[in-house]
Amino acid sequence: MPEFLLEKDGDVTTITLNRPDMGNRLSDPMATQLAEMIESASKESRLILLKGAGEDFCLGREGMTQRDNLPEAYVMRGRAEVIFGCYDAFRRSKVPVIGVVQGRAIGFGCALAALCDITIAGDKARFQLPEMQHQIMPTIAMSALVDRVPRKALLYLVYSTEEIDARQALSIGLVSHVASVETLEAAVSRFIETLKKFPVPALMAAKEYATYAYSMDTQAANDFAKNLHATVNSFSGMRK
Figure 1 (cartoon, rainbow, N blue to C red):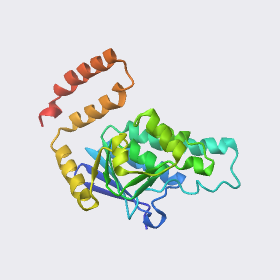
Figure 2: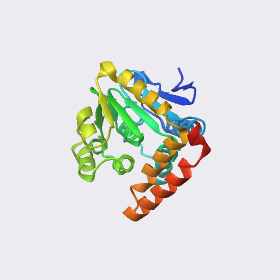
Figure 3: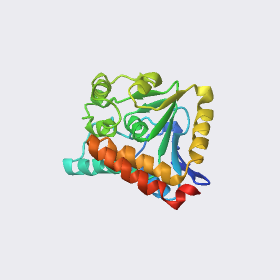
Figure 4: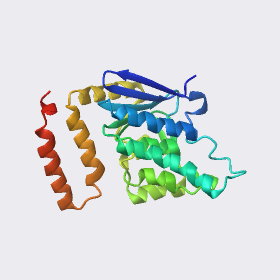
């Protein structure tokens, strides 16, 4: 059984984590493969949809709770770089990445849900950063959320190690929209159909602005907005 399912519907690419019997846990090679799939899809798609097969979205990285026979620091650093490379693929994608979360999103799974530009969750979804329970420094996972959720919410997730539900995740900005389990698929489909109506340059420009503007001072963000507005709205692709 393939570890990922890749489907294309016109210029919409869907990537499905496909290890439902393991809660869609990702090995390090799978994290590298996911990054490559995101990067490839972003070059030829209007948007990317990320889902998990089965009951859960993703229960984290494979083998992360096993603390025996830890590798040397240099090897650990290489493993960390694999994860940061995956994070970077989401942030570098020129088109929006839409996450669909059902069930649990734990550890690395929670990070992936946060990294998506838009995350639509079922009302039974649960989110957790349990690293501290396993004597694992949580800063790698924290770095995925640092520009997504407020400081106090992030530290609560880290220190409490408790699961939060979809409504709590919505309140802190970890997810964008919550739908009932029965209507989740329909809600995602409606949102995708809405995005299909927009010119691709507009989708890309909106993501580019959101990616960089929040780290700018107000004047720089205003200047960036003016430049993007003039450049993109005068582009012939906006009239197609």
